[in-house]
Length: 140
Image (cartoon, rainbow, N blue to C red; front, side, top):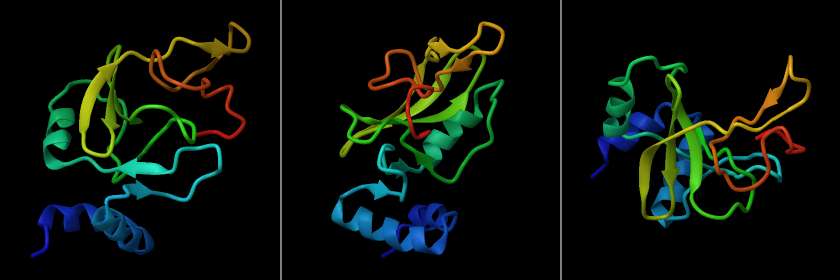
């Protein structure tokens, strides 16, 4: 029997990703995408409950996506993290590991680089592992 929710989500992905994603889920290795050597290749999709949680919050800043890629560097410690939505003063991040996942509310990283009048901001969350996004040689 086929899981209708998986089909609905998988239909949003390009055909090559649908086949790879089905295989990755079947063997338990997780979903991965082809990215540069310095970026984490793992990605995930939101389930219906998570979509509902994000949709019920006011002041959303971004449009929803079919898949959310881990925004940390390759081989990072701890769980994978993907920005799901920004709101007024905080961000909702999808945090997942092999057997767990959750939406967590985090504050944006306050680090910046460059001139005061035009700083380059870190696009991750406060307390993130690894370098700030403006320090990475390959954008994540």
